[in-house]
Image (cartoon, rainbow, N blue to C red; front, side):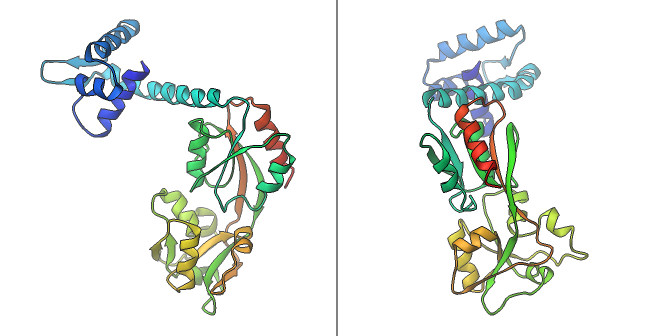
Length: 285
């Protein structure tokens, strides 16, 4: 079933017709082997999954209905395989600049060393937990919490990073300026990074029109854009302390929503090492 799903997903992603020969090549098996596997699955389920003619292959309604559950099964199997291959270790995921300075202290309290993986966003960190690449994450909200258990570690103020000598003194004035944008993240995260999140906008009677600034791929680029007067950006207070810049002024502004640092792990995890990390993280509050 898992190989069948992998084939269907890969060919449907590109909008192409289903093709047993190309699918077999992609999976590294012969076409007769794949055909027998599909036939065996259909017999086991008691329903046809594909309409086959000499010209085309298409999913039946039953095949379409099976896809969501098959996707879950494939992803769970991959995650289980990854975790089994590194049983006895702990992999911690975090953004390089997103641990609030707490990660060294947390790791120091653990009885055994941990491996580190870095993510560019909270959503990427959450994905690493779901697909088995990581065991536990220390990451700032918001992120996709599907399939995860989460505990808050701490909340801290956010600050506006602005060109020194040209600081806006109110949140509304800061939001009227172009803000650094973050290609590759979803609209919810991009809005949070630009202080256009619901928690911030709810505190403003009349939010100014959106002003999109230039794009950055990481914090170093974002702060350079601020120094050059191209945009503003918004950071946790702890990140601002760790990255002083001569040309950047960090200012707390009334109404700016908090930064919430959280520890997350797969809801199915029963690992004592994960539990020890969560205890250590939550004790830092």
